[in-house]
Image (cartoon, rainbow, N blue to C red):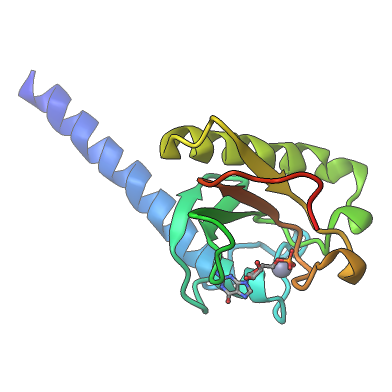
Length: 153
Ligand code: 5GP
Ligand code: ZN
C-alpha cells in the first residue's frame, strides 16, 4: 500500500516539476521549440510581462491566457486579460485566434465571479489608436466594482 502511495507521490512530483520547467522556459522566452511558430514578441510590453521581465500583479493564468491588474485602474476592479500568443489586436486577429479571444472573455467572467462583481461589469477591447488602444497585444479590459454609465466615452 505504502509503495503505491510512494509511487503516486513521486509521479505527481515529476509531473509538477515538468510543468514548472515548462513555465520557467516560457517566462524565459525559450518555451518554443524550433518547429513551433513564435508566440511572443521581444519588444511588446505585454509579452515582456508574460515572460516575467516586467513585474505585474497576476490574477489568473491558464494554458491560453494570462490576467493581471491594470497599472492605472479606472475602477475598483480593472484587470487585463491577454492571450499567451502575441497578436496586435482584434483588427489583426485571424480565424485561428477565435478560440483564444473567447478564452479571454471566459477568463474575465471567471474573475468577475471570483470578485463578486457579477451585478454589473464590462469587458472592453479598444481597437486602434482612435479608440484608445495604446498597447498592441490584444487585451480584454475587465472593469467593474462601481456603476458603469452608457455610452462609454
Ligand atoms: P489600451 O489603452 O491599449 O486599451 O490598454 C492598455 C492598458 O495597459 C492601459 O489601461 C494601461 O493602464 C495598461 N498598462 C500600460 N502599461 C502597463 C504596465 O506596465 N503594467 C500594467 N499592469 N498595465 C499597464
Ligand atoms: Zn505581445
